[in-house]
Length: 621
Image (cartoon, rainbow, N blue to C red; front, side, top):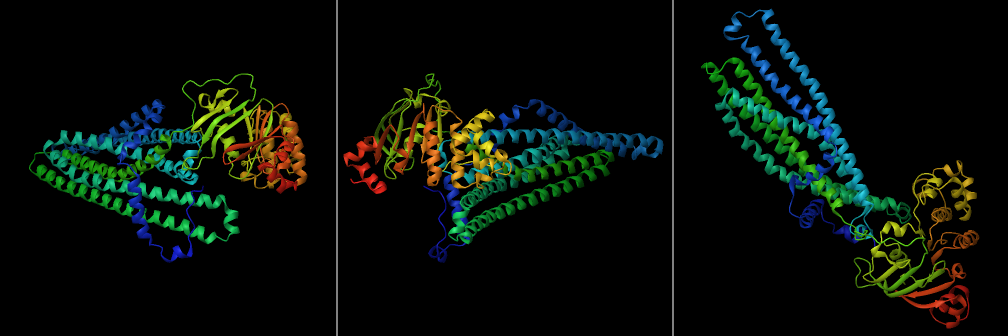
């Protein structure tokens, strides 16, 4: 089943709602999907990553405090300078007596520059390191999730969270956090100094603070919600685009380029509309904060000048108070701007946390039971009933029983939908059955570690995906430590050596994304070589020769016949000619075993296999 969005039909296009209507609908749907907002609490998930780098965090904190201290120190140096230029000291001031105060001011400024540079370096380094660890952790966790997870979410959406959302978090940690922490410490330090200079005037400044914080809190929530919805919509657009690009030849063959572009464009426009609403809310929040801050500062400074004229404060204290007030106001306004980044990153981190919180339904038990050694390759299905997630009313297997002895070649045949490929998926433990037991060498797969189970198997599927890189890289994907001679032997057995040697760089020739520079038959032979090099006791072939022409099929079948010697083999095939040499043919229909035996025995029974053979070989039923 595909999760792809349906293509726009002419009928749908005639009654298609406007982008505004779609936008309102998306907001309602996203609101219904999401739990109660966790606000910036989602960012707490970053703490374990930061704790791993305590040294960097400590140095970042040291230079952060140093830079803040230097900033506040400027106000003290400015006060000393002004007091020595005014009042009694100013009447006897000379260039010689004033110069030391200017040198002090310059020294503090140099200290501020050095501390700020080191603060930026260590805070940014810590942020980048945390994001790098986060990226690795998320990707490694995604690789542990099973097929049932990807039935609920498209791969493109996962990639969007892995790239776009983590990029938003990176911006926060590498830039905004440094900016925010500096301004927060500066604000707290400025308020402390203001209390020392004039408690009365500082009380007025503190009265202004709630008025300034109100739009940050109220509008900040809306910014965060709109950010999250926008990210959701963009992830959906990326998912849709990924599906179309993954099947680009099909899209072009059916002439659906314009429809795919329109679908992606509409999703992008909806994401932009949400982003526009977020930008308006954030712009309003920023304007209100800055306006309120500086109006308050001007008012308080007016009161400070009146106090200076009355002689209650020295002019140096007034200048210091003005400097600190502007510093505190600027820091508050900056925090208001950064709060938008925090809200945006919190929304992104919620989506990333959704990946980290996902748990595979297939995992190793707390105390896995080891498989016996040496491996025998015995397989047993005992009363297995299984239905795929989302289709509980349509079991793929119903009371399925199968015993495969060590070294035996068993072919599974039957009509499409009989459950043949499901047998291999359960054996690889991509899923667990709802009833019954699957055993490998006598061990219930649910009691074993899936990694140990899969290490004893080699799979060649009907459409075995290959990867970008060289042919050698793809073969060694089966076993990384394979020697050059072992690689050659596997390629020779798969009848792939000749065409690979003819490539410009031989085995080192890049084959492109998904090896699309090779033909279908060449890709399949490369996949067979990848499976053979594993030297696994259990070989699983799911239509392994389906992409080959008659001549190549005979060669590869002969190679597989040799490779299967001494290995337990399960073969799925629709073309019955490929399974005639099997030790036993198991006929499946509607998830059950209905017949089994040799080709001759099954034809003589005049059952389902006989009808299939009659269609393919023309043998009389």
